[in-house]
Length: 257
Ligand SMILES: [Zn+2]
Image 1 (cartoon, protein in one colour):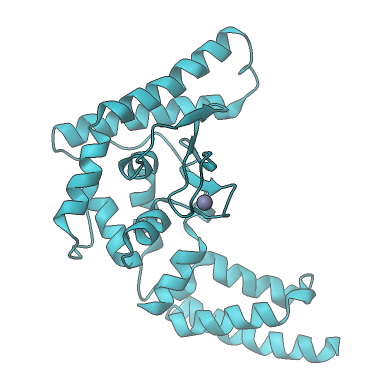
Image 2 (image 1 turned 30 degrees about the horizontal axis):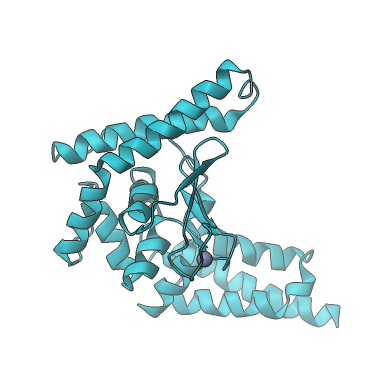
């Protein structure tokens, strides 16, 4: 049995590695890989299985439709917080940890906030319904638009170079307004105040997330200034793991379009 698996995987790996390195894989190739991975999940330790996983992670298959570097650029220079804030209809926003906020979930009905968003990580997670994602997932799911539209919308909101895909102007305005709102400034300043208070008490001494939260705060201020003055923000001081752009909806959307 194991021998068969080795043979099957080896053939597939050879094929995909050569194709991926020379011409870039197509989305249908990606689905072949994904199906193989799902089918042979119990062989996680198999070296061929590991190689396939790496192909998926390295993004060869998306070279025909999206540029991973560009997506990373938009992600670096945008923030999830003002997007979620723009659609928040309740005043029940609770600050926790360093710069994390708990919102009433916008994807399921609830009385007590359980949608957590950590500003310096730029990701969200709902402890109630399990919804999770980055800024592209969020606008795509909340506004019910395609991944490409979501990408272009976020770029347009932040005055970044964008792939020029047509998106609803009202949506751009809605999110720009949120970035310029008093409430947004109030939230990020609340987070910053908390970090300083905790530092004074020595709580943050060995906490690298406090340092990253301060970077995120600077990034937010820079963006607010840029949006108000209708210019492109300066280079973001924040860095994220590139793995964070490889979310489920990003991969699935690329197949659908
Ligand atoms: Zn939820």
